[in-house]
Structure formats: structure tokens, C-alpha cells
Amino acid sequence: MLSFLRTVTPRTVTAHQNPVSYEDGRAYQHFHSPAQQYMVTDLMPATTAKHGRSYFNPPLHFHMYQTEDFEVISGVGKWWLDGETILARKGDKVHIPMNAFHRFENASEDGEGLVVSFRLDKQDWEMEERFFRNFFGYLEDAKKAGQEPSIFQIMLFLYSVRAPPVLPGVGQKSTFLGRQLSWFVMAATGVVIGQWLLGYQVSYPEYYNPEGQKKTM
Image 1 (cartoon, rainbow, N blue to C red):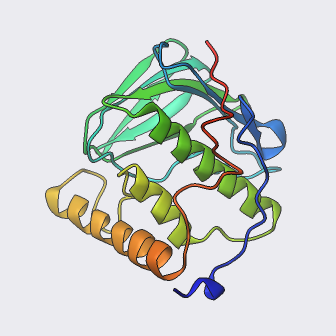
Image 2: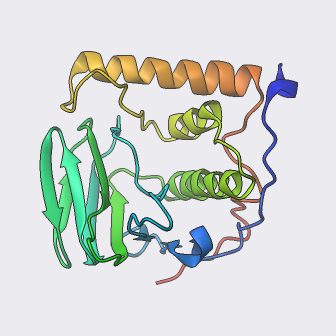
Image 3: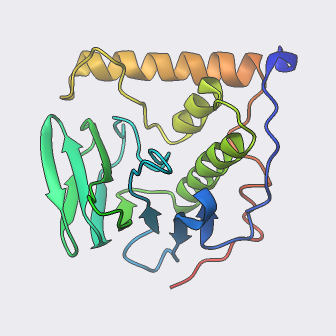
């Protein structure tokens, strides 16, 4: 193991928090009980000259084994779905088929936050919460430390939920070849290099502790 080459990022204890606040309070994630319609509600800040682009805006990616459903609670969101653009406002719903290339962002022109609830079909509630808490907790701590997030850690997190980021150059629309190439790079980068060689982990107790989580209605 080459863990001595790994960038050390100080971790903030957020496992007990629900909602979890990020980016100086401009963003949050609120996790719900499995009895509820949606798993989580996000507040995604707008892109502004002062704060720049939020890390809550995901890159183009796809879900290998799940569909995904969004509902806009407030604000305006823009989704890119297999090369098509969808603008959604309060009350609108967006469905993402399995393996579809997609991403979304806050489309506000006046700085309003985008509040969106979502769930994944066939989801493992604990697996998804573990991923989101670790993923955004790590990005927040890397930002606070003035570090560039490790691509090896990011890919390992994404591998844990089988959600490969789409490789540049394979296009905006899902294809078998594009998916296979994206999966291979994610697995090689995140698991072989990130986990096996560098010693990154799928989860950290500072971010996710199932004994101390609080779910709300």
C-alpha cells in the first residue's frame, strides 16, 4: 500500500447532523425516513460571482442499476438528459432512466437556491446516505483546507454506488461503449489505485455513523 502518497484532509464530524449544512450555510442535505416518498432534500446554491460554482452541481454521470426521480420544491433547475435539456420549476418532476447520461444544476438567474427532493428506485437507504454524507463531507473539508479533492477518493465514492462519471469525449447521450469505458476508468482509478494502493476508504466515521444518524419526516 502506498498510503504515504495520499493527501491527508482533516475531517469534520458531521455524522450526527441532519440536515447537514455546507458551503457556509448556502447548501444543505436533509435525510428523510425510509417511510417517506423521497430519500433526501437538497438546497443547491446558485452560481454567483462571489461564491462561484457550487460542488453540489454534479458532473455528467449515470446510474448502472437505478432510476432516479426528482421533484423541485422551490427555485429553478436545469437537467441535461441524454442530450436533451429540461427546465423544471416548483412542483415539476424529472425522471432519470437507468443508464441515462445526466446532470443538473441550479438555473436561477437571481441567486435563488434550488430546493429539490429525490429518490432512487431499488435504493439501499443506508448505502445512499453513506455515499452522500461522505461525498459532500469530503468535498467540504477539502475546500476548507484549500485542497483539490483527490480524483482517486472521488472515484471510490462513486464506485460504491455504481454511478460512473461520463468520460470526456464519449458524448452526451448514453451508449454501451461510453458506459463501459466510463465504468472501467472509475473502477481502475477509484478501486485499484484509490483503495488498494493509496488506502482511501468508502466511508469515514466522521461523516457516516449509522448508530448516530437521525432521520426525520
